[in-house]
Length: 172
Image 1 (cartoon, rainbow, N blue to C red):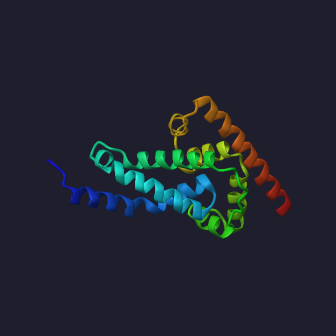
Image 2: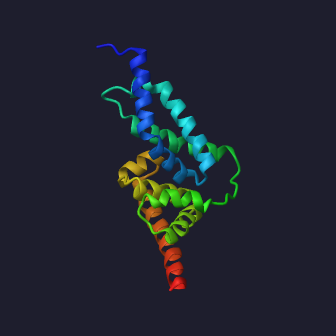
């Protein structure tokens, strides 16, 4: 059965409406700034729309495809500009971490700690522990080896543990 353009566009719209909040949170986790996350998501959704005739079929995986676009577009943007220090909006971070079930007093600390990680560690930690991807899936998404994923996971979690333990002791 041939799918009409109207049907494809309706399927694309349904996908975007159902997944945009989730994808926006991933974009934020990748880049650490809500405005940049919005831009990143719009670029990814535009690229997805162009490829929807191939991806939006029964056999396609639009979720994986757009996740891959988010990661690669974020990497491309980072390579094009010099790294700028960004201040993490703790209010915006509270919204994202509240969904994870964290106490309000811990939310800002966690967001700041994750954003303080080196870029590659941050990406690995977000994909592995926020999105729940396996080591293999994370390696494929970031185009790095599984060993590199494991080492970045280990180092990233160790760094987070140090920061969060210090905060717990100082509150304590």
